[in-house]
Amino acid sequence: MSLSKREFLQVLASASVAGLALARYAEADAAQAEAALYELPRFGNVCLLHMTDCHAQLLPIRFREPNVNLGIGAMAGELPHLVGEALLKKAGLRPGTPQAHAYTYIDFETASKRYGKVGGFAELATLVKRLKASRPGALLLDGGDTWQGSATSLWTNAQDMVDACKLLGVDVMTGHWEFTYGMERVKEIVEKDLKGRIDFVAQNVKTTDFGDPVFAPYVIKAINGVQVAIVGQAFPYTPIANPRYMVADWSFGIQDDNLQKVVDEARGKGAQIVVVLSHNGMDVDLKMASRVRGVDAILGGHTHDGMPVPVRVKNAGGSTLVTNAGSNGKFLGVLDLDVKDGKLADLRYTLLPVFSNQLRPDPEMAALIQRVRAPYEAKLAEKLAVSDALLYRRGNFNGSWDQLICDALIDAQQAQIAFSPGFRWGTSLLPGEVITRELLMDQLATTYSYATVTPMTGETIKTVLEDVADNLFNPDPYYQQGGDMVRVGGLTYAIEPGAKMGSRIHDMRLDGKPIDAGKTYKVAGWAPVAEEARSAGNKPVWEVVEPWLKAKGKVAPRPLNTPRLIGVQGNPGIA
Image 1 (cartoon, rainbow, N blue to C red):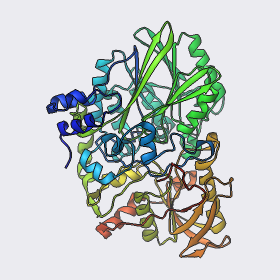
Image 2: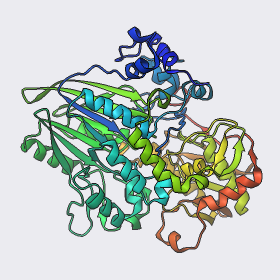
Image 3: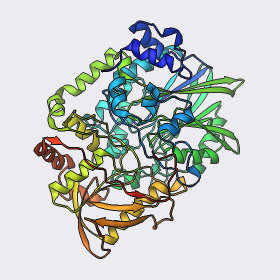
Image 4: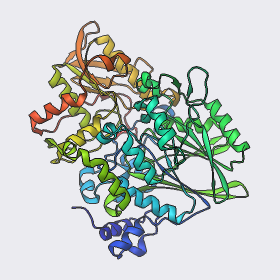
């Protein structure tokens, strides 16, 4: 049973939450409790609110944080590569508190039942309105991965999320999965729906022919007399991580040199504060912060790291604050800046967990969500099966949702091995809860989710695993592409994350027998990025998994096909 607002507040107050003055509200009634939960003392004269990676989740959800987020080389033992108790210790938070539940996987099932679901746009809207009212002029920044990740976002061609973000009061955004709706749809939304309402910024997206900017690189906003520049940094590896044909006329990339020019230009036009709204992933942001001067803060996304404390990075121009605000609507970042005589004098950063049971839904947003969902309610709610186990997707290796999908692909398509992409998005489900079509689509909803069966040699299989491992564990963040390790069914293997490129994967086996480099195996998969896949006539992956689930009726706990890890003993990024 979830805690009441007053009970919840008493737990928070006893935990002495940093930055929240709750002790005097320990005996408050429900109305006072709701206000006190998010009573954040005002500081300074500029406020930026930050959300990112909500993945089209309009309703409150459950979302389990990872127990594996390995840092390799210089990143080992550093934020964001801390999980569980190591992360709580770094943030000065106590186990067993609501914050411990928000930021870590610890005792997830029990804590989720106790503290309830998180996120939800109606609940987030209430919080945003409250903070904007207490901080006149505050801007809401959206770091992207907003228009993708749910059935309704796919079925409405992102319109549900576009309308919700306008109503939420988003001021500036950048993108990543947004681009998987294709260039024409993105430009249509930016030039029609967002025009005059939301600035879409991305300094690193240019035309492939003449190198012209596709979007505005930045926007300057006046907040209480302070000129604030918001520079956009879209996901740099979009044409590699996602189908190239969807952005065929656009180039991406990290583009430090261009970013420096943009920052200098914004300063030259009077910007007193410069913030980068980034979808790089936190490791990339940390390196970028060390190389680019004149940036006061990088508000980051992509890697879904809910960071209770920011990281300050030194560079030739001084230092830059780097943050990441988690995913799925679980968090709202609050960056308060004190600007005096045209310069940043001081700042405060707080990452607020959005506990949906403790926030009254905003009536306007709730009504919009109801209208959006009404045509699809029966389809969304259709029961597919019941899970006897916790289902989640998050972490460097297989989650239980991933394992279920891999097992379904093998069984339904008579394959020997299955690969599932290392996507970080996807909601969680507690044991005994019903797997509805909506919950399944939370894991599968992309514009290119074709199911595939491909003959692969053992040599090719190793090449695939090595390539993805390098994307994840390359010691240079600029060579990382931000996903997690490809999820695997059937095949077992060992991985040495700290080894050199091409030398990380070992001991590949199928049914206990070593994989033969020259032998061909039947490999199932989904979400191929190759252009020919869209005309190959393959079914959407949900048309393969749904019948399998219905035939099962009840899904038993499935052992995770986690690789044997080599050389990472004692790493605080694994629990």
